[in-house]
Each structure stands twice: as C-alpha cells, then as structure tokens.
Length: 264
Image (cartoon, rainbow, N blue to C red; front, top):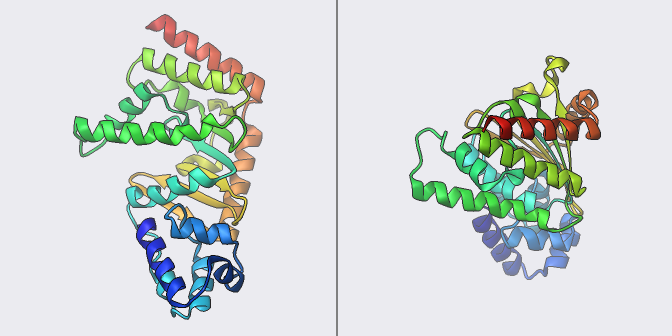
C-alpha cells in the first residue's frame, strides 16, 4: 500500500513540475518526509495528506487513498512497521506477548504457531524472518530509544516451553543490562489500569508529529490525531507510574528466567 501511494505521489509531483523541496515548502512539510513517503517508507498523516492535496491541486485524492480505519491488522501493521523503522523513540506496551522487536527467534515462532487459521511452515518461516528483521533497529547502540512496559502476565504465561521463556527473558535482561532498552513490569498487584484493552506502541520522529499504533484481537490501527495520541501517551505514562522501577523490574526478569531454567 505505502509503496503504491509513494509512486502515485511522485507522479503527481513531477506532473506539477515540482521538486521535493518545493512540494515540501508548499505543503508545510520537510523534504525528507516527502522523500520517505515517495520511497514507500512512510505514510502521511491525514492532515499531511490534506496539505499535499491542496499543494498539488488533487482534490481529496491523496486523503481518500489513505487506508480505512477498519483495515485488517496485517495491512495496518505494514504501515506501523515502516514507521517503526524511522522512529527516534518507541514506547511499547504489551499485555499478552513480548513486543515484536524484543522477541527471540524461538519465541516468535511459538507465538506465530498460535495463529488461526494456522499458517504453513513456509509462511511461518517468512513471518519469523520479518520479525527478526524488525529487531535490527536495536543494532544501532543509541537510536531509537526503546522503552517496554510489560504486564506481568507476559512473563508468567508460558509461550512454547519453559526453555523458550528462559531464553526470551534472558535476552531482554541482556538488552536492559547493556542499557539498550528499558523494561518496566506492571505487577498483578496493580489491579486494573487504562491500557488493559490491548497492545500499544507510541512512536516519535524527527520530522513529523508522534503517532500511536493500537492493536486488539485481529484489529490494528495507526492513530495520527494529535488529541488521541496525546490521550494514549497520558494513559501510558499513568500505567508506567504504577510499574516497578527499572532495577526492580530487572530483578524480576532475572528471577523469572532462572525459575524457567530450573523448571526446564
């Protein structure tokens, strides 16, 4: 979807005789943002699309060409995945599974094996590779800044086997110990809190406003409304304030990994 959108935008820009910088100036955007959209690495927000329509005189075509809010999670997550690669800060909340960018190969495979309808072994291999490719954003020692807020259930529910859980949690421990990511755990004792409806990912960028990606059962949505993104950020911050501090969260991760190792 994003690559087709980018090609069409480029065609309209060239037909209007505009450079990327000229279009960026007219649409009150940055040239790099235009370049990312045309290359299929970004999707514009609804407001960006409206400004591009006005600058290019294309009516509401670019606005209408954006995905519908009811699109399937697979379609929407492709947009979220591309945005994830460009983010300078990512804050994840996980209710059921370890966030994708922190998953090990065996854990990812175990998660994907729960899919319904079931996926073939070949398709599972492809999805695992894609998930591991996402994790490569952590190869950079500094950017993006990544925080993960985990419901305690994420650690307690056995996905695959005790051995897989021990390996997965130990992987997160290493990332925290190296100061590459921060992980905070929301213990069961906190009770109910605002984020219990599903998974949430908040993303910040150098050249566009922050976005949020929310996911439930077979449904995912990218949100670009400033008011809604601010509200989701507030809900995340409120839940984070109830979580264990980093040192205590790390101690819990270590203890949980050891418990799985002993049981294995």
